[in-house]
Amino acid sequence: MPKIKYKPEVLHLVVVVAIALFITLATILIYNTTSSINKGVNQYSDRLASQKSDLIKNTISYEVKTLINFSACLSNYKTIPENVIVKDITALENSMTTAEAVFIADADGDVIASKNVTMNVSHREYFRNSIKGKICVSKPMYSEPDGKMVNFITVPIYGDYKRIIGIVVGVYNEHIFSDMLDMSFSGIENDSNGYILNNNGEVIMHGNYVLGDDVPQFDSFFSSELLSDVSETDIATVRDNFMKVGSSGIIKTTYNNERYVILYDGFSEIDNLHYLVIAKEDVVSAQTNSFITKNISMYIFFIVILLLVIIAYILIVRFTFKRLKNANEHISRIAYVDSLTGYSTWDKFVLDAKKLLQYEYRRYALVSFDIDKFKAINDMYGHDEGNRVLKLIADTVNRNIENTETFSRINSDNYYILMLYHDDSQISERIRNLIQAIEYEITEFVPVLSFGVYRILDSNESIRRMGDLADIAKRTVKYGDDSAYAFYTESMLESMREEKRIENEMQNALDMHEFCVFYQPKVSLDGNVNLTGAEALVRWIKDGNVISPGKFIPLFERNRFIVKLDFYIMDQVCIKIKQWRNYYKDLLISVNMSRVHLKDPQFAEKLYSICASHNVSPSNIEIEITESAAYESLETLV
Image (cartoon, rainbow, N blue to C red; front, side):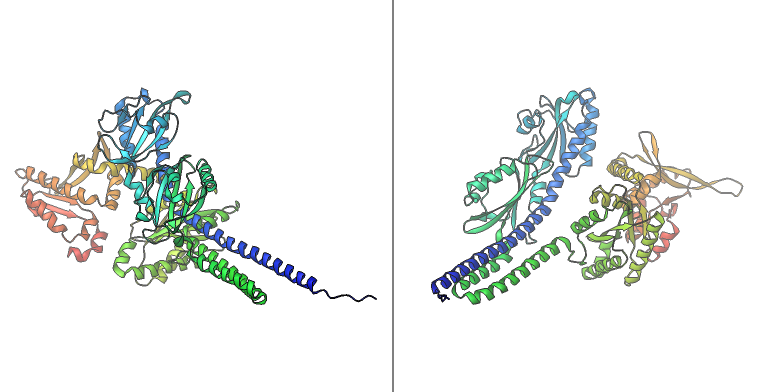
């Protein structure tokens, strides 16, 4: 039998190949691990950027939708009298909280506005674009005629056969959007610059450049010095993405020896706008620096001593996965865990609610509740105690829901519960039980809780919309003496709109003396039927129609306009007493006053001052308040 020869060169080759293979595999694994962490950080960064951009994107999208809805009502505006159109424009301006003004420009650029102005905007770029059928958001420019720096949002007006007959223009102070763009990226002040760009990368809006001279200012993003370190290929990719609706991405660059992360996120409803934020990389991904350094050190050490590198490799893999797990947990905790209560944030609530609503055989309601006058509780007991109460309420809710339900503290003292139910009586019973449980836990004071319930009929409806409708129901029971709840009905939405209309008109009605005082006589029954006094009753007379006090008095008590109205009535009564003085010397007039006044220590002094200004004796006036209100404020009255 021939002897097998030992060939050390073969063994050496095998060892070299094994080492090379091991190094290759180790390199690939280390690279993939590092890439995974970087990808996680990028996803985290993108998620935070999306959260920060939602406010301004939603604001602009809402304004666009409002203008689109208005333009849809103008398809035949050429046949409508101009004074009617001006009235509609004024009503729209009063209902919009963000826009400074709204006007219409016809196909020739001539303007119709709520103010009496003569102006033609056909030379404006936003007019030329929008008259071609585009929805446009303009760069800041001087407005005519007041000369302010404003942004214009424009939408076309379509007539018959989809023919464009004009445009609707919303005017917005540039500071409204620049302040929104100055939001903090990481929770640290002055850590990022925000912009709104068009498809070509031109700046439409910008924040206040809080990063200062660290980042060069630019009119066009693609010509900025900030991109000097970015390859032409990557820039071309970003250009392509800017031409797509709703596209997003991340770029990393170096400027003045400082690393920056640039994140962009396109508008889904406006096809030529993108939100862009610039932040220093160490703000976004500082947690990766030490890990990358350790990987490089361990890799060099692996080249020197194979055995130690193998051990180190095992340790680094374990360490890497632990760091990756911790990073993911940290990201999830920031986005999904409320730092105050330890339970779900709004984002987590939305995700969980959508999953639960997929089960069509289950009936769910969205319950919204909060603590009445929680600010007063904070002021009286301190913010630490207020935070303790919020945590206590969250713990109590958590103990009183099932595994097939979820809840979240949305903000401040506002909570949402996605609640299973069979009928309304079951919801009512659970709310009463929850009120009792919370009152049992909070011993320092008796909380007054207001609940609103929205029965979910369409599981595809947005969670935000569901919450808004539950909030509307909640508002109908707020500021009562005891905890209460209400179920949402369509009439509540109409009532809210009616209340908004009344609030828009109340001050003007007071100035125009539309609130009239009527006097219900009081006579003695001693046989002579003598007039002994009268009760002053207020009625709102508008356009010849009498508005019932039940429609405006409760609203005025909630928004405290009742204070102005009561003093106005008192003034009118004094005038009438002075007129009747020669005919009825000892006439006693009763005046109803709201309980709101009982919290004012200067109330009596103010009443006396009104009497004195008309030279009327206070003995001729009798103030009436409800018995329950008097007992509540007995100390003040005494």
